[in-house]
Image (tube, rainbow, N blue to C red):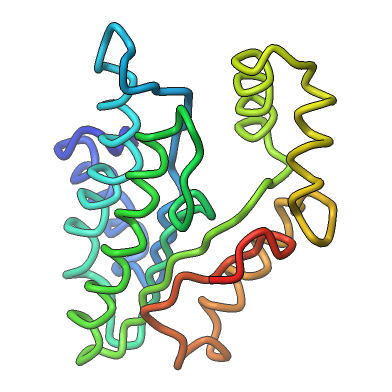
Length: 196
């Protein structure tokens, strides 16, 4: 579904409910990124990032919350960029910071129903989106992608990118019974690049 379109979200959620009857676990993983300097000639990329990453997530939550049973799970995919800024990524940082605040407030709102809500904050994950971001930042800095990657990973205490399956494993843990008392948290999985 196109999460930027509330009618499309409602249709998509209705299909899920018709098939499964409920939504025990909601993982908000849709997102886009890109360089969005504040002095750019157009606001469209900035607004598209906010619309997709933050507003679209709201549409999904709004459509699914009435159908999540007591004890269900909501997991938001934020980023370490929700915890610190990066030049040229104002829209992405704003959206990911917003997801952390959204998660914390929603966790308290849904606590009486024992629905947990957490935000995951990955660092550099070895994905196509991360590789694209590395290319964009390297180009903006006038250096090679390899040099940018070396510099970026030098700021990660464990010195390596996170594997997608590591993030998936954390999602599975939070969605399991083992995660039933973890809520309102912004959990980093970033090799130590942030300690908050």
